[in-house]
Image (cartoon, rainbow, N blue to C red; front, side, top):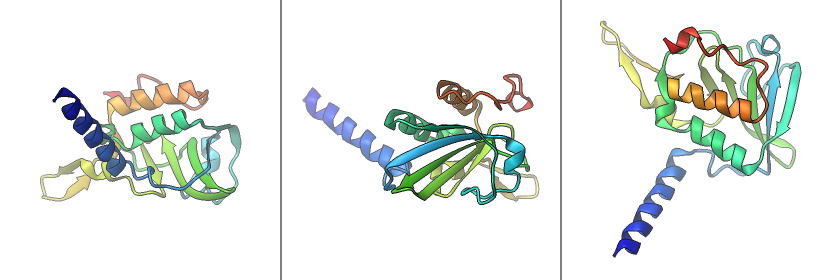
Length: 170
């Protein structure tokens, strides 16, 4: 009986993960992370169609890709404050046979990301103002900020991390 319950719980967690992770069904063979001078990326789209000043480039392992996806696809990663600006210093590009199939730009100073793949978790938090208008709270939560800082440090991308005592942490 305990084995059956365990197997059912395991199956439910796998099914739930694949539904909440839109990258799970993405076909790719390489994922590369880039750290770049943030001013060189002002006004870019997810695919970075203007020339960037690349500071660092790293091919990610499967474990590193899964860890990043776990952070950016979790509902608990959102609900924080985000800024109107968007000048990211970090991006992750998914490739299949040297062609871009997806991309994610992340700005910890502005506290949110832009992705070519729709991430449902970003739309999981809203706020309604006194006039009845509802807005997405797409900024990273404090927990996600810590996880993202730890992740970027782990892969060696520390040059443009915002200070730990950022105004977003108040």
